[in-house]
Every structure is written in C-alpha cells, then in structure tokens.
Length: 150
Image 1 (spheres, helix red, strand yellow):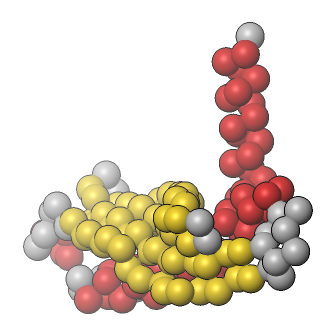
Image 2 (cartoon, rainbow, N blue to C red):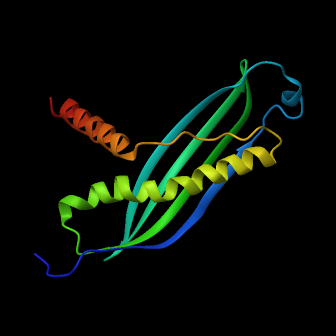
C-alpha cells in the first residue's frame, strides 16, 4: 500500500480524429423527410507510462433520410490524465466513468460544429450516464467470458 496522496490531474483534452462523409451530396440536401440518427459510443483507455493514461471517447453518428445516408461522422476525443496513489480497484471506474465525463462535452461540441459546418442542422449528442455505460460494458464482458468458459 502506498502512502502517496491520491492525485488526479487533467494534462490535456484534444480532438484525436474526426471524419465526415456525405456520400449523396449534393442531392441529399434536396431530400424531404425527417432524418433518422443512429449514435454509437465507445470508450477505451491506454496506460502511457507509470502515472499517465490516455482515455478516448469515440462517437459514430449515422444520419439517414429514408434509406439514403445523409452523413456519417466519426469523432474521437482524447484526454491525458495523470493518476497516482489511487487503489487498483478504483482505476477502471476512474478511467471508464470519471475521465469520459470530462472528455465527452468536448466531443459533443466538436460533432455539433462539424455537422453544422457541413451544411446540416447541428446534431446535439445526448448526455450519457457513463456510470451506467461502464456497468453495462462490464456485464457484457462478464457474459462473454462466461459464454466462452462453457
């Protein structure tokens, strides 16, 4: 057990990658109808060295008018966090809940800005309860592990 005081510091939040595809431009701008929006979110992390971790939140947004894809956006927001003196059992929740909560508002803003600059009304991604998201992913991993154990 370390006597070190717990430390948690944001070193940097940055847009790691962003892409936009409008496969049916310019005709898609003339389409009538209400668009459907599908959003997929993923969270992952990597230990950079002893006290530095990168956490990434990725959003994939697919918007269709009828059967045609209006646009597809993929954006990956990253953050570098210094974490020290935190008990091992608290690291995964910290990396899977606290860090994404810090990064996600930047991701939401970047996606809305890109979509609007592309000529569409901005897409405002919904707030995410990263604690529930983390628990769901944990259950899926356990179910997959149990499925493979048989």
